[in-house]
View 1 (tube, rainbow, N blue to C red):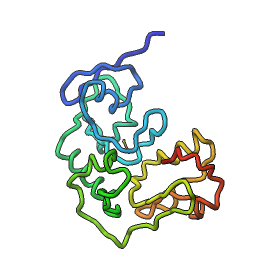
View 2: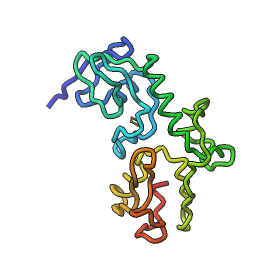
View 3: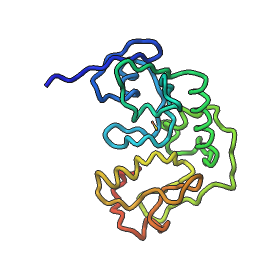
Length: 196
Ligand code: FES
């Protein structure tokens, strides 16, 4: 059966994509860049980080474009002041308890967060830095570097089918770890390294 196509406008540019496409993908197809962090096509499509927010005409609040499907006649703006302000604030909050050792960090040259965050350090607070989890031989997890995208928990659960890590606590205290915050060395982790 032929796939139904949908036409919308993104930044006033008409874009036609198959029904079911997300706003993020429609924009990318049209060469319009929307930043993203947690989105991993086919692996993690949860709308967790809110970096990809855009304005949709008629919607009360900003929407996460990575999980928001297109519809006929939709009008989207990806770069308004409201959108930029929201993304900036989200980034600043992510970085507020981030260990700022980029120069010596293994991810330095290929860090999606760093690419986005050049000037976004406003709320740095060393006292909030979490402990480094290095109980297992195959990885060191520094949760201060975590953006809570949950890609790691998705691969652990979906692909490796082990599911030993997940989000603990709530709100600002949310962090990735094992159940009851046990060390990785104490649970059934198989050291596959896919969460890395
Ligand atoms: Fe869309 Fe994270 S990339 S919410």
